[in-house]
Amino acid sequence: MLISIFSPKGGVGKTTLTLSLAECISKEKKTCAIEFDFSPGDFPATLDVDKNKNILKAINFGINETIQRPYKQNFDVIAGGYPDTHEKIDSDKLNKLIDELINEYEVVIFDIQPGLIKNSVDILKRSDKILIIMEDNIPVSVRTARILNWGMQNNAIDINKVNIVVNMAKGNLKNIPNDVVKYVVPYLGNKITFQSNTLLKQMSGLVDVILERNKKGLFKKSQKSVDVKDIERFVQEKIQEILEDDTSEELNITINNNENVAIVQSEEKEACKLVYIKTNIESLNNVLKNEISNNENIEGITDDFNKCSVAIVSASSKEEIDKLVDSNKNLVLFLSPNRNDLREYALEKGIKYVYVGECSISDIVYVAENMIGKPHEENLLNSVLNNENKTKSEIQPETRQEMKPEVKQEIRTDTRLEINPEIKQPDAMTLEEITVLVGNYVEKRINEEKSKMTAEINNLRQENEQLKESLELKNKEIEALKSDLDRKKKAVEQFKELLSSF
Image (cartoon, rainbow, N blue to C red):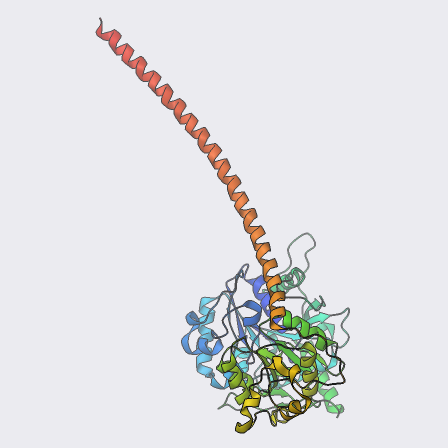
């Protein structure tokens, strides 16, 4: 069975639901989840898998070279690609990969990126089930209607395979007709993960829907039935509303059969004010998300790289830096200590804010606020110094507090953050301090694992003692049998001697 999971916009929890669904299905069927997302994907960070074993490598070299089994999981995965990956995917090779996956697995789940591209349509056409993840709001319902309308008109989406799933629902649905919704996942909080028990419980119900089976037990009930005509009516009503409302956002739909170009792409009328945060230090991510979420000039945090204006990220190679630069996002880059080679390379590529040493959280928030809404090209202006001033660009971020004001004004384009003098700066959080936080977390996890291992060792010891006691009893029984045998042998010898005397 091939399942496609798609959403008309990012940030609706599509990937979280995909992984949770994969975990539930894998308990009874051999399952593989594929991240068909061409931004720095979530699978490697969420599941701690190798990002280089991605969808492009799978297409070119097969699944044996790219399949990974996440730690303590029962399903396999293939990681996603980078922004330019979709341009390198051959449609015929993609179909061969799908054939290979279907032959190897009972259930194959494709987590498709929000913006449809040509190859995404190829996957949708081959899918047995199409799960469209929505939120209960008007913009999402409008986008969904438009995409379904386009898909039906161009024979790209079989409406009979569509199952609409509403995620993060708060009470009764207000903007989506209940008769078109196949399944509803309630709002479970901001900190929900794909492994949360509450979400897994919800996904087990969705598994029943996908496999088209009724719930078992005393209070079993049949699955909700959705009439395809109701979905078609919903689509037509929304399309009619759009035609009557000139203020609705425009949706460009184009197709090119010779190139893998975007075919469904939403045009946002306002500049994006979202920040994407994903460094290699989880504690730093949490601190930044908390600070930026409280900034009134920033719309919020997004987990969708494609939807952000500013990306605060890490990189460990020149290739990763190239991908980030090609994404055309405003970047704040964190590098591992002693990676000045990457720092220089990032500066040459035009990344203005690069950190390999001390960092101030408030500085980063201030930079993100300044870059919000500005085009990438504007933030690149004067980002690389002239050769005669190159020595100035080599000043490490940790020296910024020691610089004279006039010198600071001369090198506003190097890796140091531009500090707003009107904002009171809190103490900087150094990488050493961050390391301590991470160390405490790691130590806690180690202690937890150590406790589990100690308990297991104690259980094994108890079992060993029981085996020893059992073995001793067996040995005593054997000794008793030997003694009895010796006694009988002596009796036989005595009997033989008695016979010989006659």
